[in-house]
Each structure stands twice: as C-alpha cells, then as structure tokens.
Image (cartoon, rainbow, N blue to C red; front, side, top):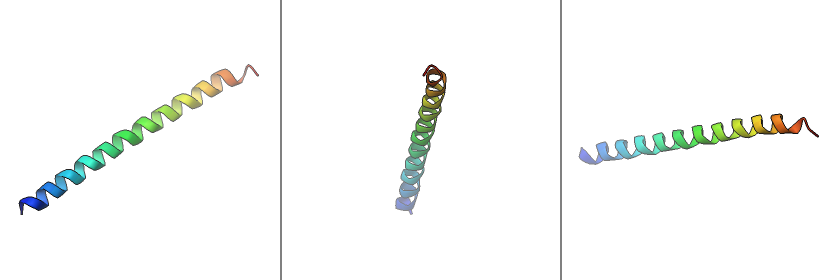
Length: 43
C-alpha cells in the first residue's frame, strides 16, 4: 500500500514540475513576442 502512495506522490511532483516549466516557457514566449512587437516597428 505504501508503494502506491509513493508512486502517486512522485507522479504529483512530476506533474507539478512540468506545469511550472510549461508556465515559464509560456511567459518567456509572451515576453519575446512583446519585445519583437516593440522593436520590430523600427524596421
């Protein structure tokens, strides 16, 4: 029974880590789009 709890805990931590990484990537992409839009009009 304890091994099932450990597996669920590890799975939850992996899912949380993946979510945090995904949000970081999305934030960086949005910032890059804003930067491109702000600097792209000079050309």
